[in-house]
Each structure stands twice: as structure tokens, then as C-alpha cells.
Length: 120
View 1 (tube, rainbow, N blue to C red):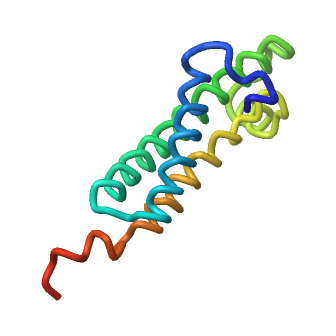
View 2: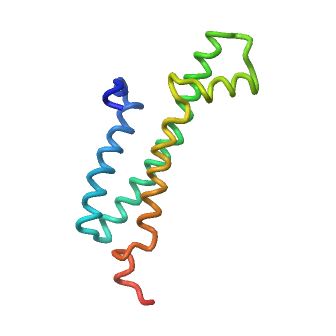
């Protein structure tokens, strides 16, 4: 996202910050998994999912506005179909953040660090 200049305002900086925090926490949880580290990682993964969903909304909204500028007669399914496959901005690209968040939550599901204080 940095290489694409996707850092113009706060709405674009938040996913970058989340990505950076995710990388750091992935290292921490991988090397020294404590209950606190895993819980913070899970929280950040939830934020990634929310960020991805909001990103899809923002990208879709921008794409539909652009498509309507190009062809004001579009509406309904035709507008949706054009917007969802448009290349700039790609409406579904932020879905990758949602997928990473889900993968992170799957990784921490029943994580051994969370099981240490519980009885079987």
C-alpha cells in the first residue's frame, strides 16, 4: 500500500498501521507466546477484520461514484457488476485484510498459551 501511495489520509493510514502492528505481534506470538501477547494479537486480528470490511465499503463506494461519473445511466445490478470488477480502486482488495484477520484468529484458536492455566 505504501508503494501505491495509499497513505494520503487517516482512512488510508489505519490499515497500514494495523499491518505493521500485525507483523510485530506475529513475531512476538511466534517467539514468546504469552496469554497477553496472544490476546492482544486476537484483538488486532479483529481490528483487521473490521478494517477490511470498512475498506471494502470505502473502495466500493469510490468505485461506484467513479462508474456513475463515467456512465450516469448505470444503476442496480449493472452498477454493482461494473463496480465490483473495476480495477481502480479495486473494490475487494481490502478483503485481504479480512482474510489475514481470520487466519490470525484461526492460528490462536485453542492456542497453547491460552490453555496453560485451564484444567482439561
